[in-house]
Every structure is written in structure tokens, then in C-alpha cells.
Length: 345
Image 1 (cartoon, rainbow, N blue to C red):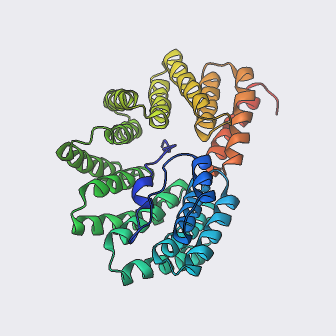
Image 2 (cartoon, one colour; image 1 turned 90 degrees about the vertical axis):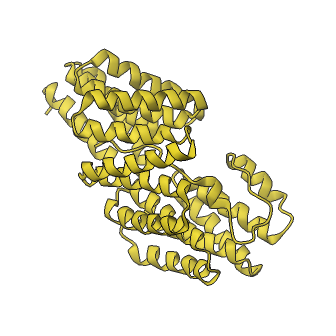
């Protein structure tokens, strides 16, 4: 099964709050830091701190935890309930993503945040909190808990008739069911989301949806359908400049071609992903790690084991930086296979 490198992040909706102050920027950390330095009120300061915690969740977990605690202190001092609730959910997300089995802390902070939203009768924020935790659990490979949170969120979004956020949650459930081996259920969730996107004329969001459908069909070994869905995802991502989604779709397309033993085609897509990742940041990304792993696998399948070694070692090193245990395991197994083929027991 192919893990989504970049599951949808509902960043704009996440920054919405009960009676919020000025909206936060949606840019990178430097924009958030400038906003924090120029914050005109304790509420704005709490919002920017929460934004920084969100930004660093997957990149620098300890930094994310620090900003979440700072946000909690600032919000509580200002009696700012919306900021307090978001800080609690940020802390819950930290434990969901980075302390894999600390469910007590996860539940404690989530329940603290939910209590504030429930007291304010803000069902939308309750659902978004469940979605956020489901997405964090999915990224940390806790698919059962991700499904539980996702199902709770989708039920509330249906009651609220919030179709855009329901569609996003259905994609999360599609990916989660895919990883649990429930491919038929995964496809059904994706088709349901596709119907909503068609009704809402939200073409840009279909990029992720088609990529996920491509991955589901890849797992079911329906390669022609997988390629068609991924080509649709690539086209939409290119038209809308969705480089993260495009990179992930390139990796998935390469995986399809690898299964069809079209090695040159697979390598071409993996290299496209690396080139695109390099335009995003100066540091190696998790997407780069997946690409190195995939190219290493391709070289091994071609009998070019020597060429695979450095790539797989880089894949392990980068995945360790991001705390991605499944990729570390996969790359380590392939590295062992390469050494075995080279008779380096």
C-alpha cells in the first residue's frame, strides 16, 4: 500500500475560530513569525503561536510542542477560549503524531479542546478537531484510530450539511480504509467524495481524490484504472500549481509503472518527483525520501544493486529525520536485499 505523502491539510479552516481576531496568514514559518512579532493583542499572539505549532508538527515535533504550550499559556491568560481550544488540539495532535502510544495524553488534550467547543455549541469546530486528529493519526500509521476520528467527523459534517469538509473527510477515510485493506470501502468513500466535488464544482480538490483512487486501484492491481486516475490527478495538480500533490502523484504513477516492469518510465516519474521536491525547500523532504526508496527498489529489480545502496541509505537517513518508521523499515529491507544480492552477507 502506498502511503500518501501529503494528506489534505485544512489549514484555512483550522485557523477559523469562535469569534476570531484578524485572520492568520497561510504562508510559511517566516510569515507566521512576523505576524507573531507584530501581534496587536494577546488573542492574535495565541493565534500565531498555534499557527507555528501547526506548521512544525511534522517537521520539528519538539518545536511544535513548544509553540502549542506557549499558545495555551497566552490564550488562557487572555481568557481566549478559541485559542485555548486550538492549543489543546495542537497538543493532542503532537501526541497522536509523535508519541505513538501515549493515548492518555492524546485523549486528555483532545477532550479539553472539545469541551470548550461543545460549551460554545460549535459543532463545526468539534468536527474539525476530530478530523485534525484523524489526519494526525493517519500520518503516524495509526489507521484504526484515524478511522474512528474520521468517522466521527464525517457524521457531524453530514448533520451540518457541510459538504466541502465532508468531502475532505471522506478522502481521509478512503485512504485509511485502503491501508486497512478494505479496498471496496475505500473506493466507495472516494466515489462519494467525487460526487460532492462535482456538485460543488471544486476541481482543484479532485487532485488528491484522483491520486487516492489511483493508489486504491494500484493495490487492487487494476493498473489501467490506476494510471487513468493518476493522470487526472497530475493534470489538475499541474493546472493549479499544486506541487506537493503533483510530487506525490508522480511517485504513485512510478509505482504503477514499476509493477508493470516499465522501469524506465518508473524512474522518469520518480526523478520528476525529486526535481519538484527540490524546488520547494533546500532541505530533503519526506517526498524525496520516498523517491530515493523507489529508485533504489527499481535498481534492485533491474539487477543494479550497487547503484541502489547510496539511495536506500539516504532514504533511511531522511525518513529517520521525519520519524517515519514504515519507510525506514521498507528501505532497510531493500538495503538488506541489495547487500544479499551482492553476496555481502
